[in-house]
Image 1 (cartoon, rainbow, N blue to C red):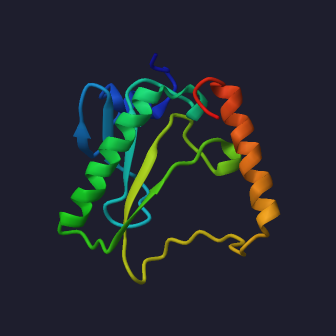
Image 2: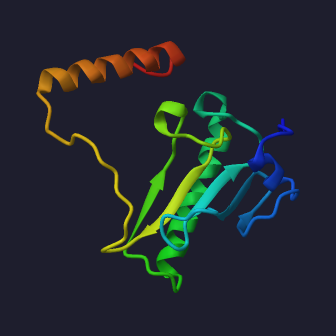
Image 3: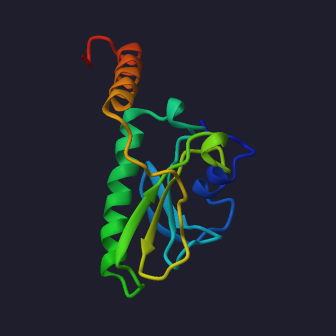
Length: 148
C-alpha cells in the first residue's frame, strides 16, 4: 500500500522527480539527492514498508538483487569506484530519515569523505556468545520451526 505522504512512494508513482537508474514492477532505484560520493543510489521497494518489520522476504530479496546488480554496474561505470558500500538504516536510532525501507548503494574510493565511527575493539568470547544467544532467541521468536 502506498502512503500519500511518503516521498519514496511518490517517487515510485512518478509524482516526484528523481534521477532513475533502474525500475521494474517491484523495485525503483535512483540517485540520492545528497550523495556521499558521486553515484550514490537508493534502492526502494514499490510497496511501502516503513522498516524491516514491514518488509516482506520477497521484497527484501528483490531489493538485495537490484542493489547487487547496481553495485556491479557502479564498478563498470565511468564513475570513480574502487569499492562499494551497502547501507540500510532501520529505525530512528539507526539514523533512518525517510521511513520507507531503502538500501543505499554507493561507490567508495581512496580519499572519499564517508566515515563510520564506532568502537571496533575485539570483544571477549563470552560477550560474543551472549550476543549470539540473544539473536538466536529472536530467530526462535520469529519462526520456531525454521531456525534452531
